[in-house]
Length: 434
Ligand code: FES
Ligand SMILES: [Fe+2]
Image (cartoon, rainbow, N blue to C red; front, side, top):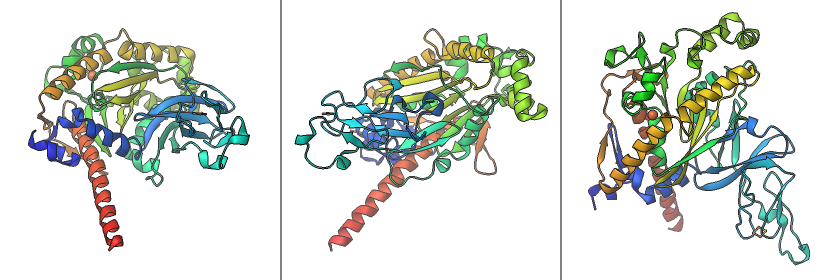
């Protein structure tokens, strides 16, 4: 047993290092499921995935099965996908359209707000239907991105998103109508590593030239300066940012000199799209939106806007994670633009692509090593050359571990706050008993 075995979770994170137990300890994983995935805001899906009343999708909050539903009042609800009779999975389908959810075990029927509305052979039913509702989460939505929490008194979603909400604006504004339409379906890849490894990797600029060497050599932008693959540190133009609250990004905007560089095409390639954008935002502003392009931003704890893909991580155990991705389709954009986005998404993350397979291989190896050989891991890169902007955002060199440090500081805060609340409650209980 190492000395780190006794430390509270918050103490496994230092300013410039983190202990590997945070990836491999089952007890820590269980606490994450409670404090992060039940008590915090979690990304569930996009409103466009349930366009009509009665549409639903099946998702998870941590390990817990949930259903996201468009109710008959045209609102979005998120319900525990569990029958309150004997605990059967209420709905096994991944998505669809229903009038209510009828349990497949004994037929109890629930409405879209979770209320039990009918039971078969009701003469023998004891008690009140109203006492058997399935749990409904609190739900909030920003630009169509739906988040939920089982916390009954959470901070607002806006507060949770903090400065990261501008990334959701940046992505949504690329659609002429200002809305995304995630109708492409999700690809799910399962890996034997810890969910936080993929989350962190999304905003780690340091690994790109090594892990994705072949990919970086093959594309036109981002890792090149004057069209030569960058090997010199001072030539990289993109930046890394800690946005606070666990959110972080790599911003490729400095490499996007003209509109549509992020789509890998010339600015005049899609005149119909350019016209629709000019009509929606005005000539000048639309050019700037199309130049800035989409974000590369991770939103704590499970959402990542990966330029032209939306991805999310689903923890399945201390040693298991599923990475989901879907193309970032722009509502109101010509089909040719969305087709291009699909091709980009496939090329980066699809089954025969490089990026995700590269990252997953590394994180599986990393997890296996750390399980066998616990250690403090170094996160100090670039800590002495960061710039703190007004508002608290920390910007640094693209290869610096600034995003990772921000991620871990927030992670530690979640557990430090929870531990402090638990200590307060215990103290109050003792005082009340005296
Ligand atoms: S477990 Fe659902 S009706 Fe019995
Ligand atoms: Fe990567």
